[in-house]
Length: 214
Image 1 (cartoon, rainbow, N blue to C red):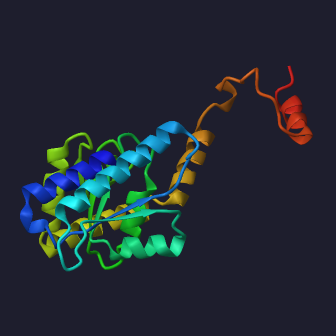
Image 2: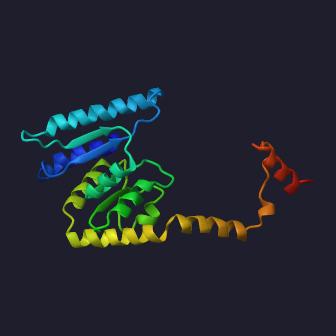
Image 3: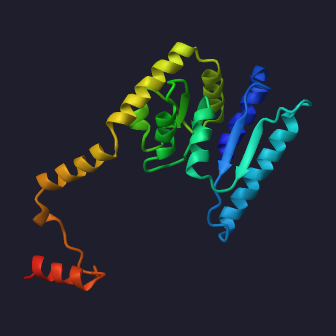
């Protein structure tokens, strides 16, 4: 998140025409507040938000960053996705990242731009419609923000249609089926049995005793 905020600040500095026309909604869901590192990260984020808003806020009401620190329910989250014209999804490392897919699923009018970290697990699937960026590259992220803001409508819609088709095809049912097909096609007897595994119930113990008896 700090790198994303730095990139947004750099974009406002480098491309002044974005000022008073672009607003970043930064949602942070409270998590692990009892851990010092998480508290430090929250402080860093809030400090950056204050700095950026202090530098660019204009008389008349425009504030560059709206900072939301709370849990967001499903309907509110959908509303944020629907209202957004750009999603800035920039994990430094991620297994999947469903946020990117949720944004695409909610863009029912085919008008939205996804800026996505190349280190997100979903980047390989969404690369043909998203603007892929390196989240450590501040200049690159700033350039992508500018590109997304001024992207022609037809290109935005073409990219989002491709993203929505991909998300629709590679859904949870296809994901589960791929696991099942792989398992069925494999020699399951060849899988190593963890000797230190402790069954959690008597029924599970009975299954293991029967299935894997000497």
